Amino acid sequence: MDLNSEFDVIVIGSGISGGWAVKEFTEKGFKTLLIERGRMVKHIKDYPTANMDPWEFEYRGQKTKADVAENKLISKHYAYGEATKHFYIKDEDQEYIQEKPFDWIRGFQIGGKSLLWARQTQRWSDFEFNAPKKYDYAIDWPIRYADLAPWYSHVEKFVGISGNRDGIENMPDSEVVGAFEMNQVEKAIADSIDQNFTDRKAIIGRSANLAVIKDEQKKQGRGQCMARSLCERGCPFGGYFSSNSSTIPYAEKTGNLTILTDSIAESIIYDEKTGKAAGVQVIDANSREKKTYRAKVIFLNAATLNSNLILLNSKSERFPNGLGNDNGLLGRYIAFHNYRGRITAEIDGFEDSYYYGRRPTQVFIPAFKNIHSDAETFKGSYLIAYSANRDGWGRNPGLNTLGASFKDAILEPGGWKISMMMQGEVLPIYENHVRLSPDKKDKYGLPQLITSIGYSDNDVAMMEDFFKEGTSILEKAGCKNIKKLDQHIAFGRQPGLEVHDVGGVRMGEDPKDSLLNKYNQLHHCKNVFVTDGACMSSVGNQNPSLTFMALTARAVDYAADQLKNGYL
Figure 1 (spheres, rainbow, N blue to C red):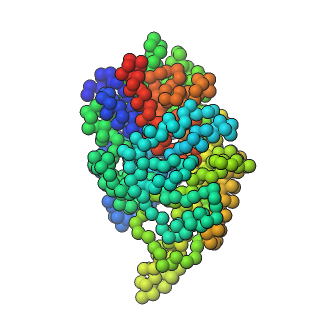
Figure 2 (cartoon, rainbow, N blue to C red):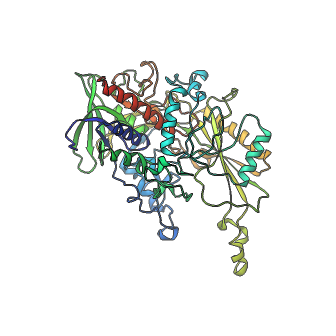
Figure 3 (cartoon, helix red, strand yellow):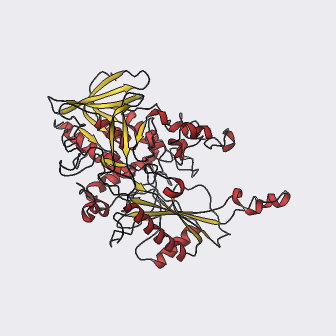
């Protein structure tokens, strides 16, 4: 396709939401340009470490001192290492200013962070959509669960979600394709919860890994999950969902998709005469040459903070403070998930039980505070996740020996350990924001983004409640040596590292306090839509990616109808 021609649609960003945007638009017959600031990554062909064994790596897959010295920020991510670092940016690839400590995790390539995500997928319920208004901590969402439910189903059937139908009101059932299983210790804790609590239930996690493969995924050329737990290297089986293995190849088959890589979206161009966006100005990442591409509709899916940056940098006579930013709230009310609390424990017995494979999910306890009854000390909700495993040979005390005893001991697993974590809702507050530096530029000439995002007293109170409730759960299950850990204090864990940042371009009914309407459309520039995490009015307690995908599919359906009827 001629890149000088005008497209029906431009999609900026090829991660989870951008991949869905191009799939939906191209299937509906629209000529679509996908702009990605990073390099091309093709499914299977560009997964260089996918099938390597530990001994084939010079450093056995670990990150080196040199890696950490060169990339102090990005190397903090749990999946970063010798086997995966090619899917992460280097710190120098996009400089930014941390007014408050914020670990901005990015992957610049086709597929974005869909190659690196943890794949956990839970639906929101009306408890989450209603909570900001009910508890008075954010503006009211312009949609409810009924608006999104059919789009959750639409996405889930295509993606393939593992899990069970659990009948939990505040975590509605998904369209599932089989489930992974709990091990014996996890089941024992789940049974104890059933016996001792009436307000909570443990379920196997729902994830975008194909525990069972169905025809919808076979048509995409994907295979079943092999439970290798090497997902971050790229899955040659297509056993987990990514833009690379699924939505983008699907879009390419239509003949309606053009992909432009190594092209940094600098700004969205506003046409003062038409009152609409005319196109996107990009910077060639290699030559630094600037080019403009035109389209009738623009979908912004560059990931939360970069989408904020692009809009803030899209200045015109009509919008001197950024595209659509009449109320001055662009970049405000950034939220994320609170992962500060962690609990570890041990349990006796079950030495005759083991497990096989490396299951790609944990056991989840859906939120039970601020659901049917109000918590006294904090607003928002949190879920709990836990897993149990046996120590391997590296931590078996029986190995402090030599000879035949050593050989016998190396074959025996150690005791059972339990790890429990929280995933808490951080309230969107005005003070948590991003803005452009007035004088500092990155190496591409873009204004550096200033992040001013931090924890609040509410986050600490929520963590303390998790410590109390998590400890109670484990004690009643017979666990011992229970230890509580604030990861912010112990390890310096900062906001951003959970990679669940949202907000800045929030949805709402009233243009006075929101940027987007109920269809993710800019109030003041109707042919621009934002459907990545930037659009979220609050963050809930569930993993966010499934909701991004459902919102995107819904917004595309609306935009396509508007295009066909000549309204855009």
